[in-house]
Length: 125
Image 1 (cartoon, one colour):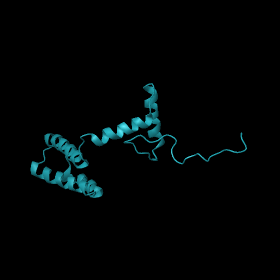
Image 2: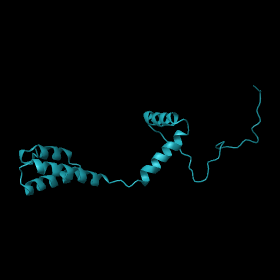
Image 3: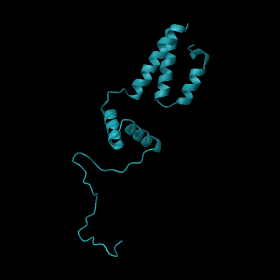
Image 4: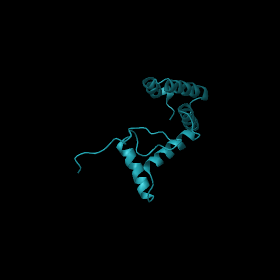
């Protein structure tokens, strides 16, 4: 080791410049998430796990996916179809109970939703 080093021509910042169109950031991810991506890269014979994370995020934001409300409505419609098929409850009572349950879910009234769904008149079985 030398006793002195000459840093007069040194520059601050990243050693490798960031390519155009890329932004250097620091991000904290769960260890199991990073490990999963690293394992994926290794199982495919190499590559860069950061590129794989970038690709996964890009795919996610450009995908045509349904909103949470659309998902809840779709699931409730599927459940409704099955319940109406199996139930002797008149349709108008069922629709009222289902709409009340949906509004409670959308408003975050989960306790009210749970209590409503436990009432005998709202039993869809």
